[in-house]
Image (cartoon, rainbow, N blue to C red; front, side, top):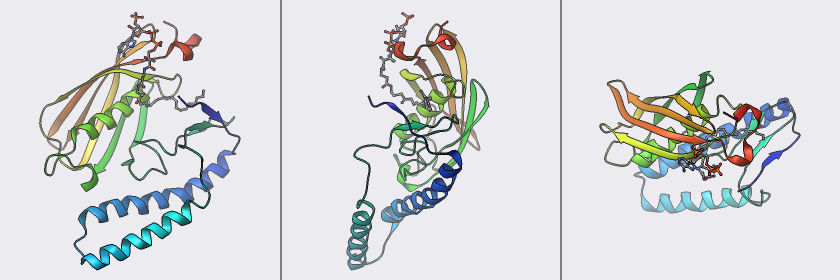
Amino acid sequence: MGEFVHEEIPSTELDRLEATYRPLADAVRDLLDATIRTTVPEEQVRAAQAEIEALVARLRAEQLPGPAGVRFNSEARAWNWGNAVVGLRNAVAPPLRIVHESAGHAWAEVELGAPYEGPPGLVHGGVSAMLLDHLMGETASAAFTRVTFTGTLTMTYRRGTPLGPLRLEARIDREEGRKVWVVASIGDADGVTVEAEGVFIVPAWAAGEAARG
Ligand SMILES: CCCCC/C=C\C/C=C\C/C=C\C/C=C\CCCC(=O)SCCNC(=O)CCNC(=O)[C@H](O)C(C)(C)COP(=O)(O)OP(=O)(O)OC[C@H]1O[C@@H](n2cnc3c(N)ncnc32)[C@H](O)[C@@H]1OP(=O)(O)O
């Protein structure tokens, strides 16, 4: 596993950088959707591909040697721009905006479109698991006061989850030593579609005073 990297970028500078990168990721997100749904003539598809390849070369002129990782500064600001679910610079991330109601209770609202489809018109089951896994992990971390990893995640798909606006919710159910049980759900306007239960674990290497049972 990589490290949590201490990088001393001031928070005000991070705000400025994020204002540049967020619209870039939004544009690429739009590109994903357009790539799936376009019906333009084939020669236009090929022309667009050439332009996209040129853009990729432009962005790759300078780049990190590997993934973005998780970074933090001494102002307690953390950023994980590549994260699969919440990464600000990741166009594959929906992105989920998570609200920590309290330590151990969080929710999120999200609108899932064409790139997240599994069965026709419905959210892919693996996508539901991915979004819940992340929300539950953040919830288990008690609003970032400790590091937790998914140990076991159990999904129950009650009915198909339609693409479109959804609400996710997660709560800590109980704790025992370094183990944290979290329950969570996804719902649409008609109620719950997916339920999940997971055991999240504060790894032995990350267990400090606060995490000991
Ligand atoms: C420092 C600066 C920080 C700045 C941070 C800023 C931001 C972000 C930081 C933190 C993140 C916060 C939130 C994260 C948000 C989302 C995360 C998304 C979730 C994921 O996507 S995360 C990736 C997938 N996840 C893995 O990649 C895990 C791979 N795995 C391991 O890393 C180890 O395997 C681990 C850690 C699981 C255990 O390792 P370990 O050595 O600590 O465990 P150990 O043997 O001591 O067991 C202790 C007790 O847990 C029980 N136990 C063990 N394993 C279990 C299992 N699998 N299921 C159920 N129970 C299990 C034992 O039975 C024992 O129970 P008992 O005490 O009762 O006997």
